[in-house]
Image (tube, rainbow, N blue to C red):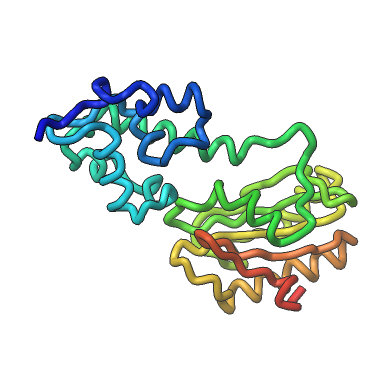
Length: 228
């Protein structure tokens, strides 16, 4: 049986034609990915190649985004240029999530804070601690990285957090950090840092909204757990 390449498909079945006539939401993930790489290999067309790559990722685009260039180039038909195109598209997707809307976001709940910070922290292999400065309407003023590495009272300088609040006229503070292990359970050190920040906020008359631990797909909220 002769295998047809994409150029031999009926026009209405070609991914680019479908994108143009039906819109992006009419295409499968494999079809969208095939538009990026253009061609497949001698053994399979671009759509089938992309479907195989996605299947190996559990058909999960988030998992695909974590694949390295070396891992993707193991597939016959995915050379350096095609893999760089895929990685560039993944990065653009992250940056779109990070782009602020015209109006600064309302981050008054743990879920909203998680959705805002997750793209920044989702692929990190080390912990980062961030302060999220809000005005009295829970609108974002600024998100500031305070430390990188393990979370301890030494690494997280409470004075720096309070200085950022004062400098930026923040009346509400939330903090968050990631657990690359995927475990949302707070450590004893997480509890200690949270208590120290809460005390400092009481002294400075800043409302301490929450401390959120972020993993890839889940979060832990001290506020929702009744600890703040």
